[in-house]
Length: 260
Image (cartoon, rainbow, N blue to C red; front, top):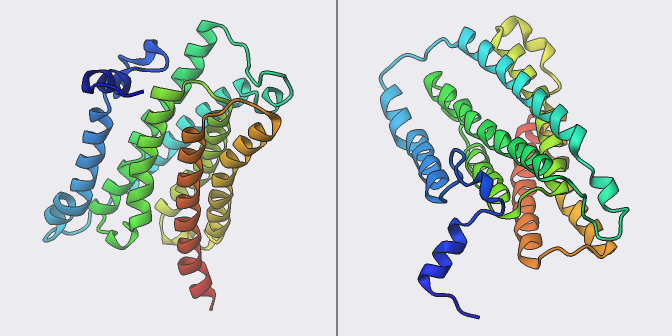
């Protein structure tokens, strides 16, 4: 059945849960798009241009505060979502749906929105790299990952609402980020602590593994007979494959060649 331009626009702007419509970034797809485009412009043109003839900034104390904040933020999200997620139980019941009150659904949705805000805060990772003139760390994987995570999270909140696989993604990702920002915290303390930073390879391995979790859960849901839309399944699977490819390529270049 065809849609008019007005009807298509209404579908694009309509939220799965209308209560989230007025939250920051959620009312229009143009808002996350503008944010991501501004981020890419700063990373590719504005930032390097401004720093071209400047000495790198010493951001030791700023990075310390930032990394501690990220550890606390991600720990909070991990605990809140972990306590509410019922991924296994949803596969044990006939309709695969966890019954939640409207208030509980709104609370769960707010955790997803806080996760989106955390992805926005993550963009400062790149800003700090620019200010420190660590441009070799600003790879395609880095920029793509930060950019697309905002879109993927926004899409889930806007159009899909509360789903158990989102809880899986958030809990695993926030747990990894707690470890990752602890690593960055130690690294920011100075060269004398470099000898304690030989476990970065394991963070990368865990990051690769996390991208398998959502597709595997959806596959288990399909086998169970849960009703899941084909476009949604394709959307999740294709982006998981892209992330796995990019992170495996990074792993091969960063670790395999160095050990060789």
